[in-house]
Image 1 (spheres, rainbow, N blue to C red):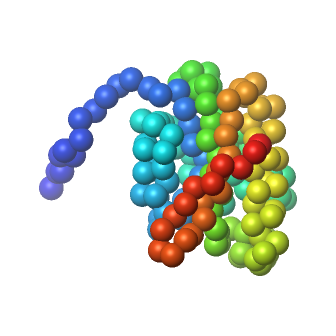
Image 2: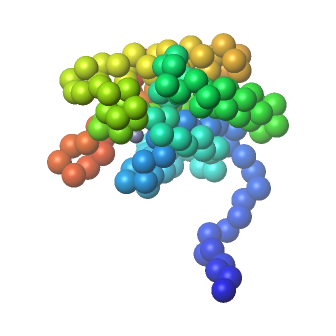
Length: 149
Ligand SMILES: [Zn+2]
């Protein structure tokens, strides 16, 4: 059985990419923030567990880092990428499980990792337009806070 999506297809690009965690509980929140908070439509998505954590030099994410660097370079070359948005989120299982970290150290490290990831994105792509955000859970809502990167 086929399904026709009600959304129209627009072939133009926004020349922006977002790197964020693949956690399905927040996928729609990330989309809403990027669409309405940053007015970014049709941005390219790089989703994997931990999101920007894979670019912060953790040995546990070495293979993912290579893959994301390769994908970013592809997007710069083929999609003429100009802007990259990095989003970390509270309660991320990558940090809790893969890196075995707990709050409150976890959030401090996530913020530092956004800075490290932005430096790597800049180094491997040459782009200057890189932003970081921390998605905080607040009484059943998700609040996106800018992080200086
Ligand atoms: Zn996560």
